[in-house]
Length: 78
Image (tube, rainbow, N blue to C red):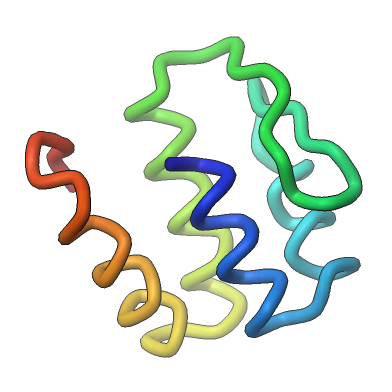
């Protein structure tokens, strides 16, 4: 799910900004293409930090994009 969010942001923000913002999240390791390769903190914590990072950058555009992904994962609380 984290990879999917990052890749969606790559489409919106471009690869450099989207990956750079993801790499700002402690406990999250990301490849240049946006693929998550390691999560060292609880996924729910990392997920919220990632969303907060993107929302701070581009607001409601990101929230709407992320909400469409959450619809695929109804068991995940956000």
